[in-house]
Image (cartoon, rainbow, N blue to C red):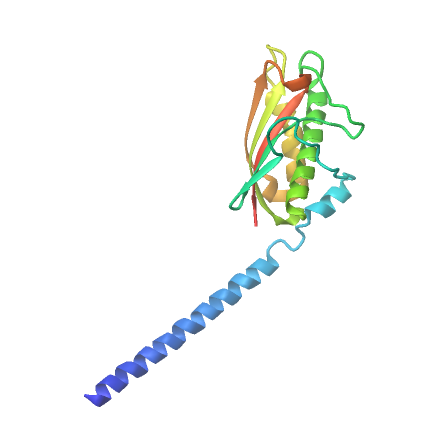
Length: 192
């Protein structure tokens, strides 16, 4: 009987060692994948390469904040196309502005949102994924190319974050936007 229990204990010890070694290999493999996963992922270097300088985010104009973090998600409030000269790009796309001008306004808005994100995170390489974008276009009532305008924002996110910049999106037309800005865009970002 004593030999029987000794054998069972020995068997349990061996199984425990094998499981422990498998877990160590699993951890090492996971760590190796994390280290080798996208070594060229450097959103801030991409911004520099694109000649984009981020600014200090503009303060909210009402009783809200630029961003709220909950868990590993950051919800960015809607921003507009505030240019470095302090002026907004204004007007209705399809009436006052062309699609190309709307596209540019959306890109400027994207730069403003990246400034907010940088202020929140300190380092844009902490972005795991751009999850969702809501693009609102101040458009003439007969304008129907809202996605072409919001592409200015989406294209920038992919240029900066690569595959991590691809996101779910809505691009909708509005009868008006605050202070007649051309676009207002908000987004949700997953972070480390």
